[in-house]
Length: 140
Image (cartoon, rainbow, N blue to C red):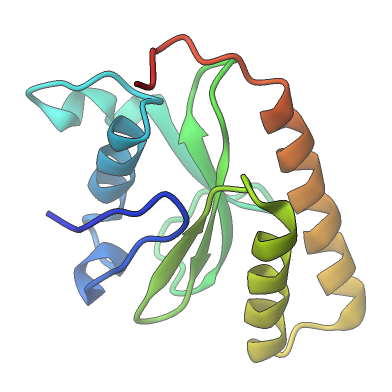
């Protein structure tokens, strides 16, 4: 099992392989967006990981910026910055810090300025929706 942090996920290469959905489920359980269960497979159809702008399922994408969370109205959404060998979770709790990380990621991947603006706008929309989230699960 991977070690999780609220602001980022320290990863071994395995998370960027087939186990990504289970690692995301573990993360969502850890932060309280999903209730703990004995069998994580119960949640496979209850989570989403989609590209931030195109909303395509993560599939076999080796890199990109993805939005993920549980299918529920009142839980937070998170961002996943995914490269070929590592991933980083942005919680959007500290928007300024997360935007700098996202900007750095986009520049490293030689994203056009116009595309960068679209990603930043989409991130701010996710942040604004998170401000309205009222968790159903006690996160203590």
